Length: 218
Image (cartoon, rainbow, N blue to C red):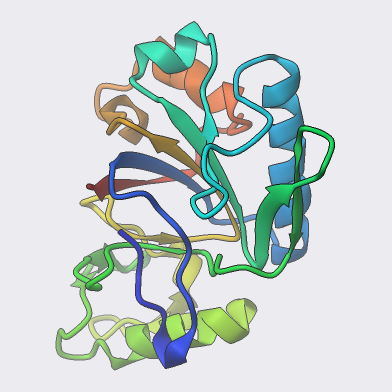
């Protein structure tokens, strides 16, 4: 369910199961690893997730006895930081280290997504007339994220790739993300959001409830 990154870059990792991904589109790359480790330690300390991933090649942490996650259908949680990967630390836990396939692009493998200009709300998808700037921005993101801007073919404004949103919840970029495996948690989109959805966001550190939501279609 993730973009096949341009110029031969590797992709981030997702299971083929139904997934909901919360993407922090504002956090700086240098702060992403610390955010992932902090959330990991808190969730492990609370007894919400197992300290070791269920599969080293697919690093998601099984949910333990946690009613909030269980009621949402979430069975495991993945914590993603650009340019980092999880491995066992030799003491029964996990450690986040440099390297790995995380590039912070979250969208379908085939690149079939649609996003809207933050200035004029015009939709844009790969392959559309004028989408060359989008495709270039995706390539730039993998190497120099702060320089990844998109020129809207409709209003001609240049805006950061991180500000473009997907009405279908099938695209976002960000250096820190949380994958909820096992369910499409629709209440997180804001349409019909409820108290439980707010609690879930807060539990995962999204205190402002502004992380972008992407659904893996499994």
